[in-house]
Length: 182
Image (cartoon, rainbow, N blue to C red; front, side):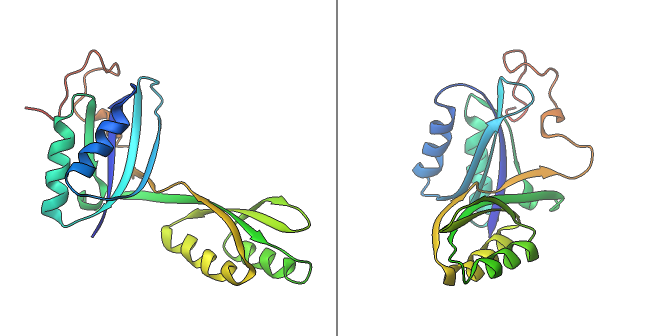
């Protein structure tokens, strides 16, 4: 089963490499990875997807919680599925005069944005579920996909809940105790 894991970490050099090394040491492949600063510049959010059964992923999460710079870990997939997830892709397609209109129709159907046009290609921005992006790629494939860049999945819980709120006393990483460790 594909699992969507969100990890809040202190925004310090080397944190991402330690997390990736932990996955690698346990022979887990990270399918997608997205990392960015949160509203607090001292905290970053890592969203990754990985294949594994519930027991395997729970072991990975326990190991993540032991890392010093990890603030919070949640597996959205097993947290009642109450989350929104999206991916973004930039797709550059060969676009000759004869097929340009059809490529533009496909982009309209999937609500993709045309972000660049020239005589030989069209670049599209597609946002949505992984299946939507794969469907767009399947339809554009026959025209000749020249290049693709995908963000990987990002996720957020539905409703007013925030990942940072759960059991944290302050918003400063240096001031808080890690609620994941007992």
